[in-house]
Image (cartoon, rainbow, N blue to C red; front, side, top):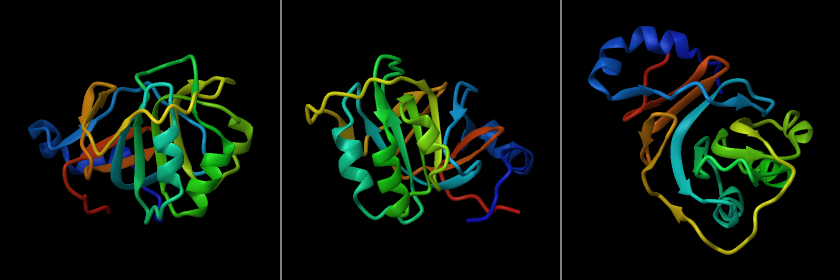
Length: 167
C-alpha cells in the first residue's frame, strides 16, 4: 500500500469537499497501529461496548478494506485488543477507525495495521452478540456509509463517497 497524504487530498479535492462528497472527520483520534497511513473501502459496524461483530469481521478476508466502528464514543471499555488487531492484520485489513477505545496499545503499536481510536482503556467489552453491520455511522462530525472510501494518516481522516485518484 502506498503512503498517502490527507493534506494533499484536501488540496486536490477542494471542490469535492465544498460539495460534500469528500469529508474530513473532526480531529479527535489518536494513532495506535504500526501503519501511520492507510486507506480502503469502509465496512461499518455499530457496536456499543460489545465487540462480538468486530471479532467476527476481523476473521474474514479484509482485501485492503477499513473497518469503521462506532462504539458510541465509549471511554469505559476497549473495542479492540492485540489479538483482534493481529487477526485483522493477518487477514489483510488495511486499518480500523474506532469511535471508542482500544487496549494492549504497546502490542498494537507493532502490528502491521492502521489503527485510529479515541483513547485506551484496560477493560474488555462483554460479548453479548449485539451490534449492527453495514449501517451508516455518525461520529467526529460526519456520517460514514458502508462502501465509502476512507483515507487516514498522521494529519487526519478523510471519507469519500467514491475512490479517489491519489497523486
